[in-house]
Length: 351
Image 1: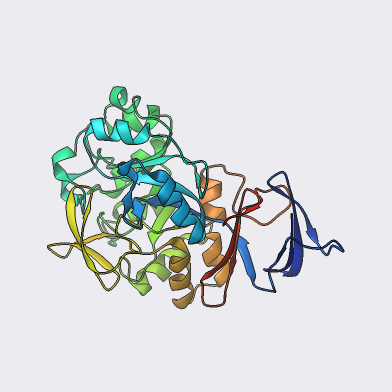
Image 2: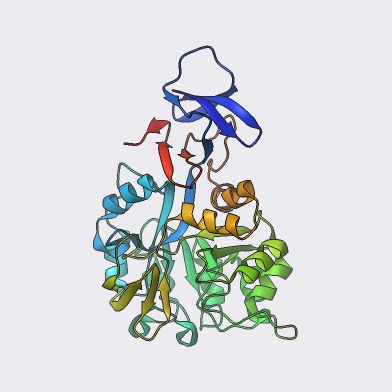
């Protein structure tokens, strides 16, 4: 496959694809299979924290529908993310068949159940519990887990669980967070949300993340985190350490109304998803729109794209996230208004 007239960061080029990977970038005499028409071509977006989309939740046993919907929205790889739920339901969810079309499923992200009741957010408190390595071994295809490092047994769990660990839904102090990072945790879950704030004499987990230089997830939808805080995190951590996420849940992409998410009632009102008491319940838009919001806040376009592609790919050791020779051929061709023109996944045009 050849993509002609692709507007990349360094100019207009053709992209040659062979066996699902980028084999060359330049100017080729051969006819193209796709004419990008000088539209921006960016690496396929990687959403490391997404619970659902378009009326379907990770726990429904229908990842194929989510995968197809995300592909149409420009997300070419994702980590289906669970809510705090019963162990039986989590086992069933993580053992469901993985889709064979649409966006790539890299692995599951378990958000809970090993979190703090003080910072549960929109998680179901009835299922919050202490870490248990024996039950964790019953889960399948888990790539990342978010937990609160102050709960009993967290440090031993971090050292021995065998997957990436994020610090989230936590009331921990800076010292406890640093111990968790030293044990192996390498990211904050949706930074600023469901954790103590950064204070000058009590810097909490955000201060620990800055001191230790770990990754930091960020919901950049203009609702979960204010513009000033988005820019502060970006300037503090840089595009090498900030990972944009959607944190989208089941009703994302649907009209206003009342829905269920993780066993809790959520209300969609003009793009905002909340519990009945007004607590933010999750994201309502795909990752490409989070990039658009970051750009509207003043972040450079390619820096924003990097935080949704190259940076998450580096955290998880994926051969994705860059338009360079040898990388997986996952691309999104976008229009000037941040809508999707075409999507290429594993070197094939997605239709």
